[in-house]
Image 1 (cartoon, rainbow, N blue to C red):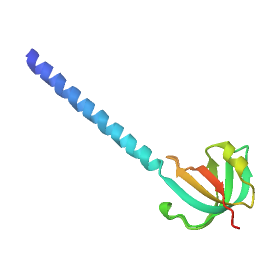
Image 2: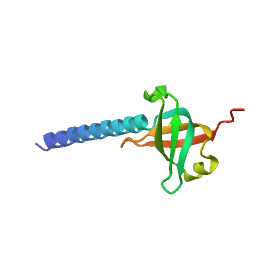
Image 3: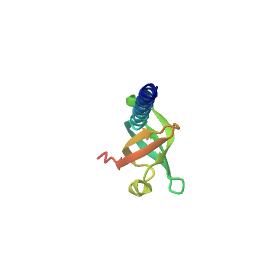
Length: 113
């Protein structure tokens, strides 16, 4: 009887460990999918340093299936806003968070000259 209980407990521990590994793998996949970086080019329309946001008009972004539009992005690092001005043409990288916020992780002035 003790042997059956020990075997049952061992089997149950293996099942629990496997399900935890699957959940972890699933979470990692979600994190990786949410962290895909997209790249765009656009023109700065407005900068809000208090809210850590930037409004810009961008061209099509194929990696996320967007057409050209004007929209507001959150900015990951407030220091990035010190490097741009309204009217600047920029290239930028952004991610989509799990709660559907779009966060710029890199932004750089493009010299059109």
